[in-house]
Image 1 (cartoon, rainbow, N blue to C red):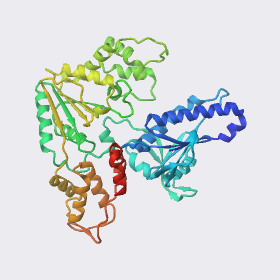
Image 2: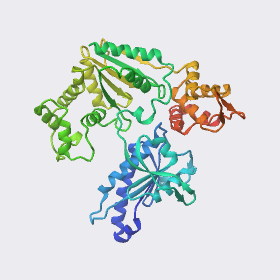
Image 3: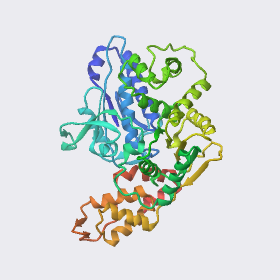
Image 4: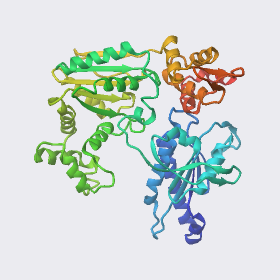
Length: 494
């Protein structure tokens, strides 16, 4: 990510040097804070320009998304950097994704800087030059990774110095608010649901028990890509013909310290709150969630600051209610639909849950006994659920797919046409039983041009090279390698 101040030369001519330096320092600190918020790395300050990496020194499975979210935060913060003379500070941001090699330090001391080999930083800098005032431009390589997470606007093909002509790029408009991270990043209908019949039957059985009036807690664990969310989506699709209610609480890796983040986002969606609406309009929409005016008024006082329902909140205002009262209110709101219909509350990615939401779920679990509620919680193996085991409690750890199931999945993705045995063998070996890897590797091979589509099969005209890691999986693989530092060097050598 490359970020630069707009019209910095006129600023230098207008302000004295000390004032300008103070303004630049404040801007750089703001950018650094936004980058750090998403585990990025500020590589270099270049006057009023900032170069940042996401994926170094620590890789994440969503580094492209982190870069774009950091960029939007930077843009949102720019109005706060207005100078006392009325001068508005604005920036331009360019983002590109790709593989680079980070070498040794090329200087020493506080100004030390890592040498970087690769075209990506240069592309990001050139894209930044084309961005509008307080705009964010992303390269095609980044757009591929984040297209379903943000609203993007296509711009005319660009001619970039040192890069070329006809370069495709997109302007980021805003982040999308989706109730399910899986739905935002994956196409649930992209492949048949294969190899999980036993797991699906177990979840459906617990749902039927819950729907009959015996509340159930179901904890579903598994590594990334094994299909936890897909299993939940399939289960919900199976019961779609039944009269029931659904609540989705999506935990976020960017809000692990934001109290009640997934619950507040659910309330915003349930009430239909629009970001740009006035507090008065938001209050009216929110009040419709309640049966009485008195209950609505109290809820507005308790949750107003967090949901933007109040016209003004003094910085030193005392809380209008205790934490216990807030949790009791939210517990009542979450469980209320069960009075009319069986209810499934799906909590996704609990390994990113904030402490207050965790406490709220503990209170909710205590009341599950005679409620028509299935509380379905997904998490990764490194997360240890803190909740005590009630009577109606199930734990399921998802395993990797068998070779047979992987082969069936590959056949489905190949539209039922037979693939050469060598291709299937490589995909099965490299995917290691992870359904996400099977899917992405298969798609990558089918789109590579190495195969020729025939009437009932795919032909391979030349020896199959070693399968490259598709861009959709690169971040995920790098994150796994970084978690296993001792084998990273071995993997690089291979």
